[in-house]
Length: 494
Image 1: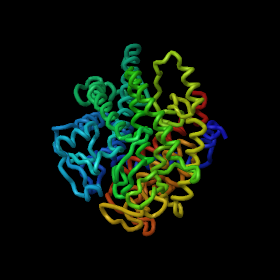
Image 2 (image 1 turned 30 degrees about the vertical axis):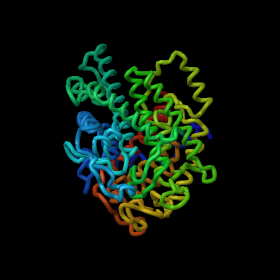
Image 3 (image 1 turned 90 degrees about the vertical axis):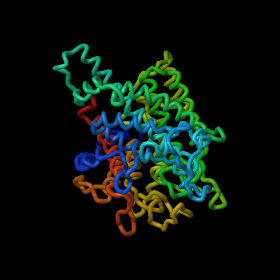
Image 4 (image 1 turned 45 degrees about the horizontal axis):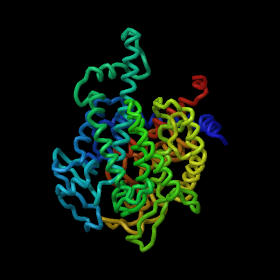
């Protein structure tokens, strides 16, 4: 089946109509939870950068552009540099005996360019592990770039339309009122000024992240608990973290092209190529038919490989800004030999895809195989769990099975898996996953509001309502609805 056939199958499926109804109802019924704060909700009152990346994207999709601009500016104001605000680190590190220390100037310099895990208040932030987590920095780069590219493009289009058409007759699907308001803003809510402030900081953050590739194989290494699964003590070459890194590179590259900074974008493209090559060479398991982490042997005595639900994030990363991505933004690369470059991309398969090209066939096949492996190995009685088996070791807390990250159901990562399945036209899986989060008519199930669910007792646990999970689901639904809208028969001629 070709990619076009698969897309047509997705749209022509009898289940997509009910999915559309359920998805729209879910979005409507959860909208009130989105704008209540940038913190994850429930017991979490601080700003967690990785969580904020999803909330900010949902703010943009919900029309809260000014709020997104303000918070993006605020977060990047807390970028780590020597001699600035108080920074503690190490609370999640077994090497540091799970004990926090205040980062001295030399340690701040070592972390320079990264974002903290948590921003508690003015002048006080925390790095949870021994080193800054890769995902907190990378995901904020991705979301910041993703939002700015779209707002700047809409401003540009609005300005162009205004120069040709009286403002009284300008109309679009999106309200032009907020765009006009943005154009009159100054300071931290003005997108061009925000871009001027954050782009140099994002480039510095890229330098920091690139420095995490210790052995120069294109893969970033991490120590224990330096990602979202902050009790699983996984360390080494983690698929999820490479995915975050790729998203940062892809979306910042898109923004730089929008800003006419093609040389810097080309540099990021080289990092993209190198990272994808590294993942395909080292983190693809032919035996398992899926992508899997290579964990260090500190806690087991041997290299440790286990399938986790969050490897689906890599499938999102390789499809970002391609024809598989329903919410993509397209830019004309400043390259006179564009057609030759596209042909080269198609021939090599592992180079970054130009906008509007689908994911290369070889990567598409591996993506589908990975989704099949997740369903076969990590779904237990149709519950999609974060780990296929129980964890061998946890910390700082000893987790029993079916507790927190240990073999449980997370709405957050389920939203990620749903988005990945949509990107690769796995409509049946999208419907099954949504059924775990909403009723048949789309009203949110209580499951959708909890941080995690015990699959044995069916009881919700952790933060409630957990805004990160809600927004991850909403972002997936927005992407799928756009896919259905863009490929439905009524739009086939557009």
